[in-house]
Length: 388
Image (cartoon, rainbow, N blue to C red; front, side):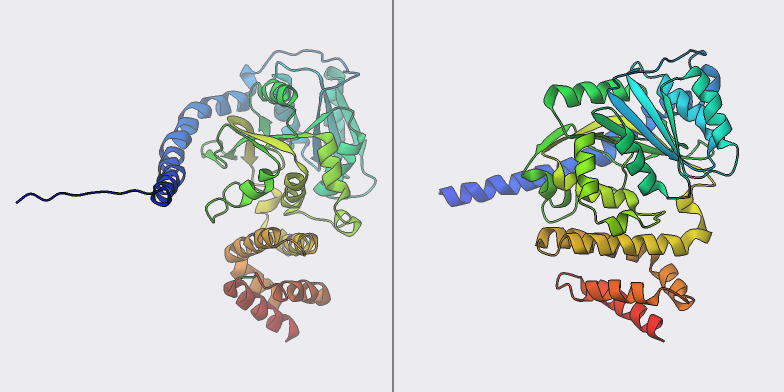
């Protein structure tokens, strides 16, 4: 018996087939590439650089760095009682084959010998500029102070515990100037304080983005969040874009003392104002987690909770008329609450002040139609606890 099959594919079927295979390529094949090829590559190859940078004995020999009158990049570092880590931090900058820098330290009212160490470092590196806060203002405000005082076209924020990768300044600067990118975002590597437990935090692709797709792509792709991150330190940023982002943030939020979520707050606005940006697979930053890392101090959880609520409140107020941005705010809210729900509930049971602040912020979210049911249940439970 002979069976003849006849296929007739019209234009509509062709379009469906095209989108089906496009979906497979971008979601399935891409997932396997990212999971099984890119990350192992960094873990095997970049670990060598990580240890090399961390090893003080094989860094460059002592050298005098002269002041730069017209710097191309400003490295901005808020610092509080972190003098002990500064020599290693500074060596990772001095090892760069890029010297057109100014290095701005904003001392946030340190109480140890940090200022003495900075003054010693200034003797050999005249690019260092020291700004002293007259009272403790926190990382967010200190970074803003440094940005406003900077003289260059581009900003790079580096924390005093951390290190930057070899040649990242030269690479990102040339790329930004050649294609006029507002922001270049690179991979960040997290290493435990014992230097034995590194991991990739973000795995990016070599890819440029332009408006109007920047904000949409960063947060939505095939119905899922793709490129959201909470770091400000893995980006070379045009100063004018950073200042624009800062100016768009209500003065109330800028004056709040935040020890958590301040990077996310700034990132949210940076992406809104970027006309063009570039993601590079190149590793640019080593985030060294120490025993003293502020986000790992359990005793500061109450301050961290306040910071999270300030972040939620800011994003909601900034996105009232934009459904896409509301969904982003809800994602951030749901993710953080899912991770910290039990701790937050325990803390709320012992709160004795600022009830009004938390209740008002919760009410803002409960009025939002886009909040998932699970988040609403958490909020209502918190509200009941506060009102007991």
